[in-house]
Length: 234
Image (cartoon, rainbow, N blue to C red; front, side, top):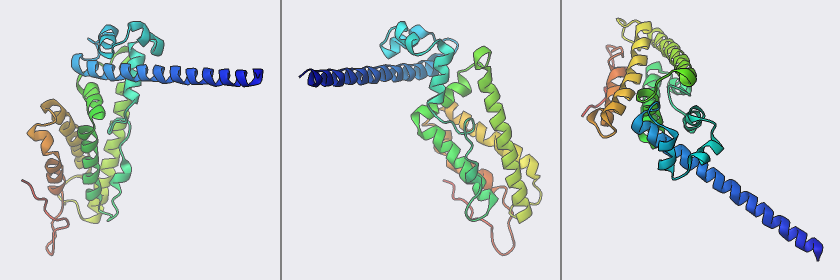
């Protein structure tokens, strides 16, 4: 009888522990969601833990239970999503099945734009990092990470343009190294301008056309045929 009672009590304690953990994780996610919203609304510097607590519907004590300070909360919010151009660059997309380096560059740019503009949390986080954040003190490391990824992207794009030049698909009058710099600046600029103008702006709605035109103007045209079909722009 005692063994049965002890076993039942143990199960009840386990259920309570699981329930407590679930509730704690739910509160943590509420705080992170509220932090993302407030950082996007006010900017990281002007957002206080009181703002976040009010939006999350919790006390400041609840925030301190999960996060030591605003910087730790920012980093946790930041790590919830994987950002193109910052955390990953999907260099595998620059290796197209048909072997055409320019097709790979175009496919890569499309993947970046779609990841940022189509997923709400990714878009909002990218907006915070691009437009609403001062990279000083505890956040300085974030700027270092972005600079490192930007350099890696530039090197990879330059290699692909050199490959295109060697294959004869890049226009002869284009310097592959300058093309790599230009495309790096182009894709970062297109994403930033789309965020600035808003998700429903003409800029955001025609990102695919902009990318297609950008790559098309770099293609060499041969006498017998065009290496790639001219994109259709609206």
